[in-house]
Image (cartoon, rainbow, N blue to C red; front, side, top):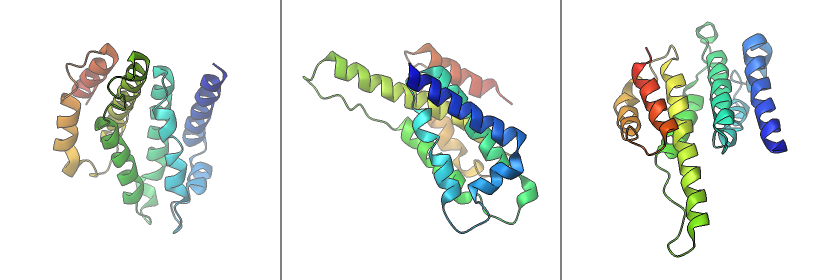
Length: 173
């Protein structure tokens, strides 16, 4: 329970920093330099996106969205955001393509745990896709068909949370 509170607090702080101090936040991502600190910073949100608690996943996706808004801000045209966006996109597609880790004959507890991990990854991927589609860049344009197929494949998922997220993606502008 304590880990839940720490993860939730951490992503809420990151989101607030990105919203309320974008210049300071941007400088910590080091997007203007040649290092990979910016992408490493974003990568720290990926494990939180796979959290078992849906509220933490939603808040992590919101934090990632705010981070990406700062990083891809059109007023900072002197740098490339492709590496960061590709890293996020790759993570999303891995979430869709997760395979069950449960082995036959191991027992139901292991199978349920791995199914929960798969569902968390799928939910996180759906959350982040919506955020990527809202960015002012054409990054998602060549990837749109692949994302649509992966998302629509979950439209009849047994979990209502995932089905609702697919619906949210369909009806969003």
